[in-house]
Image 1 (cartoon, one colour):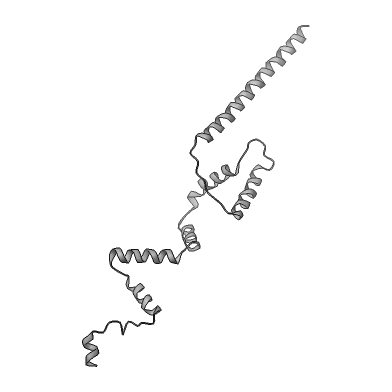
Image 2 (image 1 turned 180 degrees about the vertical axis):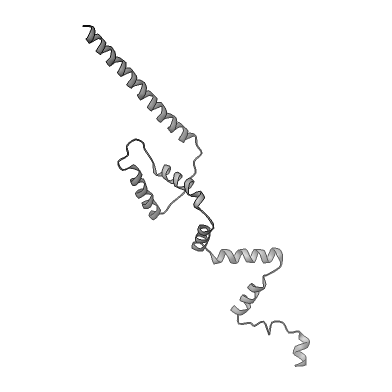
Length: 148
């Protein structure tokens, strides 16, 4: 009878330990959830192609790994935060080339020309050439035209 009581006592102790562990896990999970909710959140819109890539990456991370739950947002945040150091001048140039907008640069140049009352010489030359005006016939004075 003593052996049975001992075994039952150990079983009860193990159950209590398991409950305690579960509470600890749930508390940890609840703390993480609360921490996520307390963080400021910002939205970024991605296109369909980027979403497919993110889904593929997420699948790689989660397939066969049931020890945690990782969301697309978790993955996107991790990728952004961990790619910061590898984001250099080459990437800046590529992005600027991909998103170059001639209209925006012209508006900027016009604004600068108005504000500074100055147009860079190379731009003046390009404008004149575009309209078929050469530098040689640029500005003859009225006197020069009368004497010719």
